[in-house]
Image 1 (tube, rainbow, N blue to C red):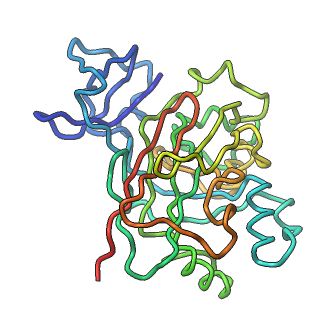
Image 2: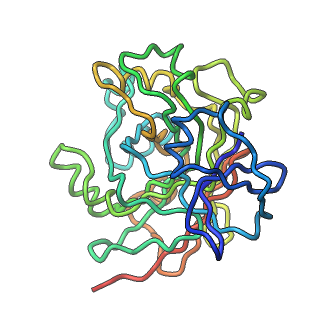
Length: 292
């Protein structure tokens, strides 16, 4: 099944089911309420819209937003750019950080260019939405806790991030100004034919374009740490909640930092960034101007 949050000229944002090229509004307050109700409670209404008759928003507002660091190619390149090898600890367990669940943008939204940076970058990621609460979840059981998958753009201010990381506490202002999600959430059943027999992982092509030019290309199946392993780590003595979102980390080649090392060129005002993941769609955003 495919879910979204949509609005029309006559209605505010509301959750919806996407099926056979039509959008069916659902009688729930938000997407988290849909998840809590369960897909077996979903009934298609008689009212529907064509895809081009509605505006798609971020499919949900995360309860919490974690971002992992799970693609080895990206990790290797990022560390090479810092003049070092991959830390041996990275191979011991999946790592993640918490970012801001309150600065969420959706498809078509304009991303504010932070006044404090001159090195704005995109990050091509896939994210999971947690479908039921759980603690101490085993990796092999983790797929039962995944409601679905969406595209995640973890926008980054590279110059600020580089300075912050020297302190050793992880990124903060280099990340917390914007995250994009969308355009839809695709449930695991809809991806079953692309399973690669690793918990929470599928064979899905991923790509990114800037102003219509392809910059990045990878595949979800190349992830080093599976979402099963990431969930097991995240839920160890810490309960995951319905509506939590966990990003994969950047796929190999999936950001300008990898492609241009530390010097840029970076994103500019007016640039159009399109992240595409097979079976999920295209998450498109436009870079806004700086505010003084």
